[in-house]
Length: 122
Image (tube, rainbow, N blue to C red; front, side, top):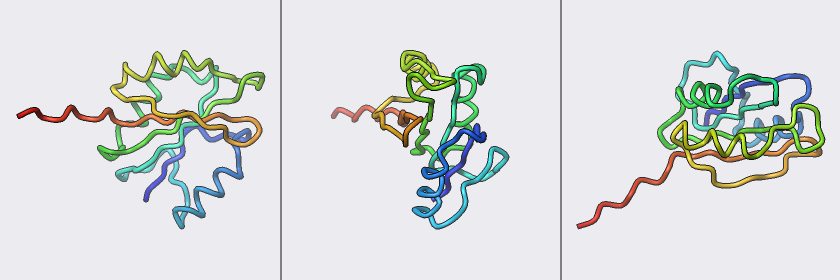
């Protein structure tokens, strides 16, 4: 499994990073990786720019069934991103939001996946 990390800074949750690396048995790939990616960890803060553009860029090397985890500071933390901002970006980039998790003391994660294809009717 290849996992790419985008938006790393000194404020990220190092315990999460270590757990992911242990789970995949290797290092996280950085933003410049040119491989097909299974999972993207997108660390995102309020002042990081345009979320739609960032998700589109993250989606570009993603496997067709790949997942993006948008990781944002929790409410009350510097750089907090309103959940509505993520919800508005998701349909624009052609993904579906499936779940939210708490990541450590300071971060929240939103899972984005390709939409399920409509079953063919006979």
